[in-house]
Length: 535
Image (cartoon, rainbow, N blue to C red; front, side, top):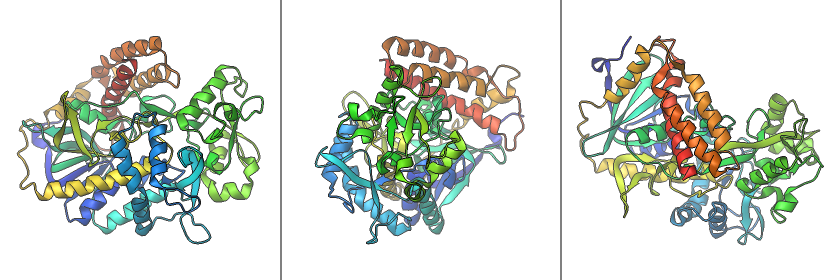
């Protein structure tokens, strides 16, 4: 079988959104409620998007449980990002935080409640009162399943507003016209194997992170950097990809996330001596120091021989002193994860944890309206018709390190902001721009290279090489020598991407084809990360 231009199906919409996680669905809700025709593409059912894995909460200075205001939140975010955040964007996010959380509550979000009916808030790493004086309760929580609750809430509102979801579709490439404006995407329908051109007045990328470029990751298997790969292939630079966050508490050997809410509720980290070692590294915030600091401290303990287990290669997180009732009320998923992935009853014994890749601070450069921008050496220039929000975007609110619970806030604030801007943009747009005759040529070439291959390298093997290289050369502690070696290795792997072969060439429901196409995105993000880190 081969893909030909005459078999490409064309459809038109006002807006195409790639990704149906928190940011994609918050934006699509804004658009659908305004009466625009919206196509929201997702590789998985919307409520299975990776936002579902967010556990601890969404930050907002509501002050329901302790004195708080947006200025403290602003300071913590800037400091936590190692002073590298865009401070105007951070101010916008922190000012908007209470509004978007209350709005989410009105959408039907089932937050935990205080006795007076207000939203329950828990402490979280790096969040403080009075500019670093003491920890503050700022994370608005729905047990330890906040992302799950948020996705279902947004999905229900989108169904009510009649958003068109294209479930189990994979966007492949951006379509740009001769002026450089984005006028649509090419996409593969997995159920049929058919290729589509989806023409639009605006395209919004909301594809999440690319944590699957690393071997040990808390990210879902769908997080392969699709939006970043699409942007890079279309000639759009990526920003700040040297900044990756290692979450301190991934289950050792499994990588599954244990929420920072554990430490927010009072869990502590212990080394092989039974010492609460974070008291040495961060005497004020202790186990609730920012994630990058806790991860480096844990790695230091392991490197100095105070790790736990037969190989001394992990740290223990102790929760049993909280009591079974508190764990089951506030952290029900943690008990389940401990049992399923570590064979540990967290109500009775500590659980082994290690720093695990979790979040990408960099991405596609945008302004606070979600418009994708490029830099010409003097000023930012907007890429016409292209927007990006969420983890795939770099509006630069997180700097070099994101504070916990700011990710869900990022999705809500900038998803809404982009949605509002797109409504204005589309209403002033007029008719669809003409689409180039060669719009799908790049995608057809990619697909037919796989269809015509007879031997070569399997996608899973090449993806494995990428992940192991990144894990070895771009970990928690990096050296110039190690990063330089990583640059050479990733370049060598990139040279082999054209040799990827597809053994199963069936058209319908061919997930092997999807995985092979994902390698193109993995290598774009991996190389951008490795080169920028080594620079």
